[in-house]
Amino acid sequence: MNSSSPQVVRRNSKNPQPSYPSRLIQKRLNGVGRYTLLILILIFATFPFFWTLAIALTDKGAGGGTSIYDFPASLFPKHITFNNFVEVYQSFSLGKYILNSVSITLLSIVGTLLVSVLAAYPLARFKFPGDKWIFGTIVATLVLPSETNFIVNTLTLQKLHLLGTHLGVVLPTLATAFGIFLMRQAFLSVPQALLEAARLDGASEMRILFGIMLPLTLPSLAALGIFTLVTSWNAYFWPMLVLSSTPDLAPLSVAVLKLKGQFNYDPFNIAAGSLIMMLPILLIFMFAQRFFMRGLDGAVK
Amino acid sequence: MKPSANTTLLAYTFLAPALILLTVFTFYPMLYGAYLGFTEYGGMRFAQGLAPKFIGLDNFRTLAGDDLFWTGIKNSLRYLLVVPVLQLASLAVAVLVNKQIPGIAFFRGAYYIPVVTSISLAAVMWEWVYNKDGTLNWLLERLHIIGAGQGPSWLGNEATALYAVMFVTFWRGFGYYMVLYLAGLQSIPAELEEAATLDGATPWQLFWKITVPMMRPTILLCSLLSTIAALRSLEEIVVLTNGGPLNSTYTSLMYVYNKAFQGFNFDYGMASAAGLVVAAFGLILSFLNFRFFRDNGAQS
Image (cartoon, rainbow over all chains, first blue to last red; front, side):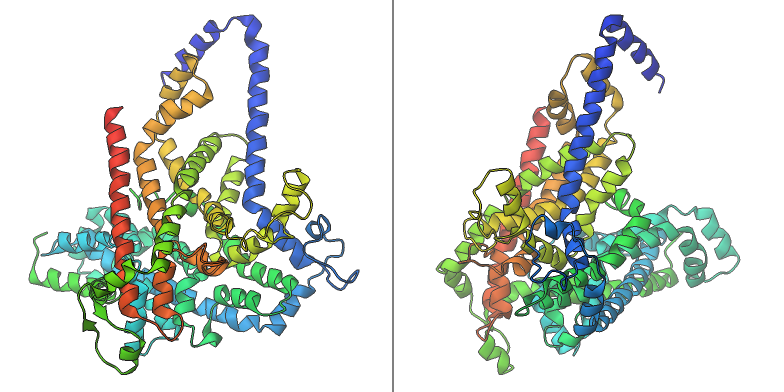
């Protein structure tokens, strides 16, 4: 802070008066260049969504023989309609898949929060034989090879009679090093004096955890909940594998692709279905952007 | 606090759900999967309820002679090309958005949207983009890069399919790494860049001589994450091309997946053996990543 003001003076004294306007112009140009780049990248990142939105809103009844590849008309639909949304909802019983997605996602969030919180509390606040070893083991899961776990896990689920159930999709994903580590860091930041006082008052550890620790670490809980929500709502491969024999239990992410795989599919309906699936994620992202944009600091470090 | 028997019991009670789940669904599959790689455990044995039979290195011998497996390894290694491109681009974008100008939060947020997009939606949208009549060819025609109707079906052509899938990985990844790099950039002291600017450094020099060296730890982390992800690429392939056309996008994990789950000839033994080979490649690549960035760091 202190060093910045002398530098400004130095910079001005180094550049004599006549060059000042050109400097200003150069700065403007830099600004224009930066925004041009920013907008180009913006188009690259979001273009597929806007085209999908345009397709979903297109009135396929109007004008006869509408194609999604009719550029640039298909990017700017003349007749806007919400019929595609209604149609895909009714004809593909989208409601069923939405319920499946909600069920899987809720189970994941509740389970992940519970398992992570319970495991993180003793790791952050207790000293007991084996504590370092257990923490090291949990962190090690981050780097150990896991590319073929899905094979054995489907065999295990089959033995437990959980293959083809939502519980089977969720169970293997609940205990993660990320969740436990995130909550452990949060618990570490709670002042020790608060815990001592509660213990002196005779509060049980359960009470301390749920009555004192959790209210004080709500931001971390919210972050973990939101990450779990997005991951679980979007997951494709594992739910597809576990629910391959029970297609009626499939979540939206699996159903949308199955829709597309159907012979003679209607792209307008698929676009509408895709947007229905994306909408909750977009809303949550808009309201909870800071959790993502902080780059998981604290968790990654 | 001195550990008492009571505390220990309580600690393990709290830890029990996580430890049980990790044991059953993370550690056990790793060990049992490794064992399966040395066994015969095909569809017949499985259907008859027989246990896997230990056969030593036989699966690996079969793998060595299986052209499809080598196609998978080759494509997985080609997939790694996405790593340097993705990392450099993400770092560059992070530098671009690392300036407090009006609207910058909006741009950062928008760049992150592909990261929170499900792979199945990405597949739906990008198949339209890559279609022979899709937006990519339309754009290329408009820019007079290709003639009318000459554009390929990008996912249906064996010369382009793998790169088209890699590009979707790039699209879904750059916002994620941008955020990680942004956190790293904000830890570079501003004085350093100011001093270099005063000495007449161009933005290009600034990027290569100051930003990149200062960001080495973050670059190591990101390229490590991205290398492992690229080597394990399977989801993108399954949803976009399913290994085709003519196995041009058939990756090593695709081989594992196909051996384990496709058709009546499924073979958990072979699938696990192939998985072990991929894991070995992953370890080697992680080690190389470390060596490359650590040694370069030591020199400068």
